[in-house]
Length: 426
Image (tube, rainbow, N blue to C red):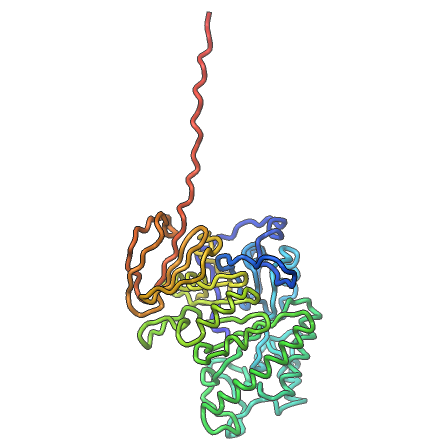
């Protein structure tokens, strides 16, 4: 579930020259043409714009700064405007894999809205296929806790999967979206409801039914969208708990990680992203450079902002995009680190003996300490932090923290003024 909403951080909305926006350096398109691989540039930016209706100013900013944007299905005018401003920007439509909804705006006067945040409408499904509403062991429909009028669907049922896919592909093609950001590709129901699904004996059996369902659902939706020349990017949850899940569910056009760089405050303070097999799978995907890594970090503090961006830089590739989310989706988020100017990665990420990870760039260097303990690290000479302050080495990097350093910006010099020859008299 998209629980976060973006706001601006260290952001100035600048006037946009539309021609310059169209020529901006968006991530390159995948290509079957042989040639040199795309460059592993510093993380691009993206916008999960599913909050309020985007303003004209926000769309201009997005066209100039973001490689990919996600919008609600009813924002077709915003889609067209982004196309005008910068045709290179990928624009995906938000669709929920797991629920149908009947709050105002999705159902009005007993009629499903034309544009939905879900694949199937509540009213139409209730009339034609009430069996697609998931029920618990007491035969009661399952409403998500904290999300009024969001109803869990039988995502493991092939008939539901194919109906969802047919409706979504038809809409994506008709409206001209580049593809779908499919939310709630989750591995456990417990984050939304304590209910057990009918026919299961315990929580693990309920979650296994859901996971197996998503495995097949993803294949059906991904194949059909691919045939239509469209993208599928699911929001995959809890992938650090399930080896291979990220790789399997990002196999079409990538995946979204909504809790990137999250610290385990209930444990030993390590970064959860590095736990289990997920980090290896993220690195492998980034190294291939063929699909999108849409990374979201909860930036409630400067530390989290540093960690999120620096960890994304460790994965930097042609389609690695990062955003710092706090606390709502109302505005495009922008971080001072996205203006750091790291440049192109000149090496792969390196794990040091003390557990730290570092990576060099053409114009800087990053270090991430995913452990719960402080550790010493020596940066390359001559670098400064993003505020221009020199950082001599070695220094101690706290646990679950990071550092982003860049080359000092050249100070423009004024050429000396040539003295004028005094005028002759006589």
